[in-house]
Amino acid sequence: MPAAAKAPSTKPSARPTAKPAKSQAGVIRRERNCSVARTLDIVSDAWAFLIIREAFFGTQTFEAFRAALGIPRATLTDRLRKLTQLAIFRQVAPGTSLRKEYRLTKMGFDLYPSFIALMQFGDHWLAGGKPAPLTLVHIGCGCDSHPIVACSHCGESVSARDAKYRDGPGAGRHPAKAGRNTRRASDGNRFQLGRPSSVSRALEIIGDKWSFMVVREGFFGNRRYDKILTELEIAPNILTDRLNRLVASGVLRRRQYQSSPDRYEYLLTDMGRDLYGPFITMLQWGDRWLSKGKPPLLLTHVTCGHDFHASVNCDRCKQPIVAADMRYRLTYDPKAFGALGPRSVDS
Picture 1 (tube, rainbow, N blue to C red):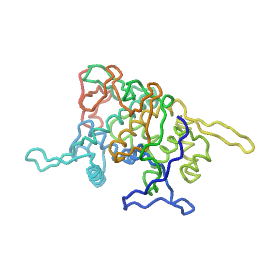
Picture 2 (cartoon, rainbow, N blue to C red; picture 1 turned 90 degrees about the vertical axis):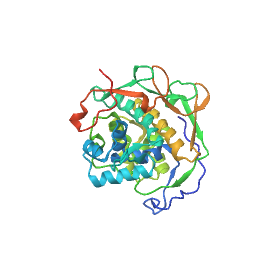
Picture 3 (tube, one colour; picture 1 turned 60 degrees about the vertical axis):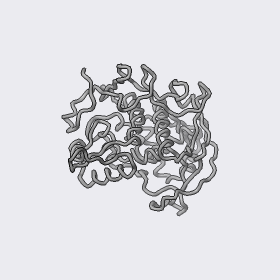
């Protein structure tokens, strides 16, 4: 992916509640407008992610969420309230029951392709030699499915090397908000609570905002420490920590380009480049639901020459997948984790 062109400044966000983040020099930090970041602001909160994931498995009631996740009542109440305010969930009182259920909205169901793209990444790179937690079955064609991230125009798979981008109508920068998932969780394995999940494993790597931003800069062609530092206006100790962790996880590799003094650049590995699919899938969701019709980036598929958005398709019938058309075979017993079984199929 080529280096990004410098984007013009845009007006600050009109939402008054969060204070802009300040750098060490006291100057307000400005960050790139980014639909992926907007999506990650929702799913990189570990508890919010886990609740949404359980909803895809059919969980709908407060007590069922609590039993499956072992989540404190106050925390669950807070996250369900926030996810309802964000229109990811809607509250429903079925029949004459006074007990409210939490059901995914169209906006919430539309996160499913992003979860599947992250799951495929986790299955491929993070399974540790063990079987994937679940096998997808696409009811539309009746086949075991290993979905691919594809071009919406030609239907062929898309990678970072055969796509390019340009600024969209929403390009620019805005004052960064303080405390937006930029601090790495002290217990990153919280994503692993409840049932086994390849999506959880992927978010353990890119789930905090700074780690995501560093990887994103790799897709923009920014490899060198000083360039990333300037672009993100990040504290040097935080950048060093995230770079070291991304190298240790296999997403980046370090290459020396100068001696006396030694200087290094950080390049995406094959594993790191494979995050491009999940990134542009989350970008599609953020563009659709959070960009107010002004996407920050426009993508072109070099292979077919057309602008496109990411489509997560069944690898067998090539049709876009939706949650209602997918079933699962599990390699674990959900009862052992206090979870509900998903829409399953017979072995």
